[in-house]
Image (tube, rainbow, N blue to C red):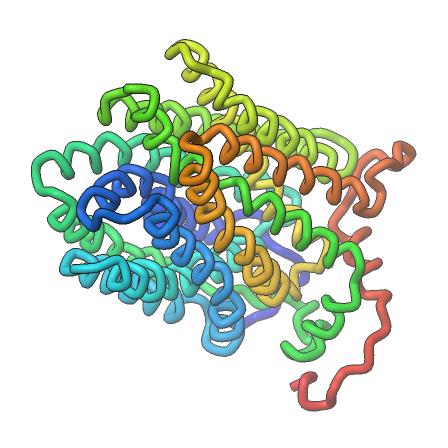
Length: 424
């Protein structure tokens, strides 16, 4: 491949955006609608909410904890074959889940097998996209991640309708067929070689540098806290609404309302991230704080109008923070380190994804309602905002904006002894 001096900010990059759009829809669109299956699993296996919550939590945790594997394989073989293999694993896991006779089977099929497939698709695709864009990175990331919002809007009522006609086993078979389209998404990826890549060193050198870089470590802690509370509505909101005597279909429709707001938030945030001067971390803190507040207010709302208003607020702000969270990482670690950096972040924040939903289910079992679950989830996001304000230049108002090369220079200043074999 011919090496480029800098990302092209377009060209085949828009096809990568298209691939990431469908890939994010088929991964996190399914995960976000998992609360529709939640009630079915509780009834089918006669289990407590906390135990059923582990299905989605294991899937999210495996997807994130296995991200370094996807990153390393993409560095070695390129993202295309890795993502295509991940699509096959994700579909196979859903297929086997349709034959489950216990929660353990669902832990292994959806949680472990499908989660492993998601680990091989999500991180390599976003890392590949980040290498194609610099000036328009936030907008490209926002457009790619709108697939989550659109699919959540479509999947929530669709899955509820399928459950009423084909039960949960038949629905999982159809979800397996949908997941197989991840293979086509992987086929659209084309690796890009940049002139800065040789200077980044091998995986060992990159990992050593990242582990000694303070801003990157603080950023990882912040995203872990955010991740702990972020997914709670998508796992427990339908059950919470049914506790308030909502019918299943209107409850699923509220997830679609969140999805529409999420879609608008992602596009608006992507545009603002590139257009508004100043460090991108300020916008990220704003959206994270508002998301935490809206989560904590869910138990207070009882009237349908109030719940819809909160759903709109939560959907917009939670959608807005996502593209910025991924767009900030190349500014901290550099484009050449994006595979390693994104994989490491996803691995560490899997702790939050693993513990968040079971903690919420446990609080529901102990207290008898979801009040404490949503308040604690909001608190985790507010704590993540507190960590984000410690990033470089957050309180600096003299510079008009934060360019990627400014923060990358700080990342490269850390002197770390690295093994010779890590330099390739």
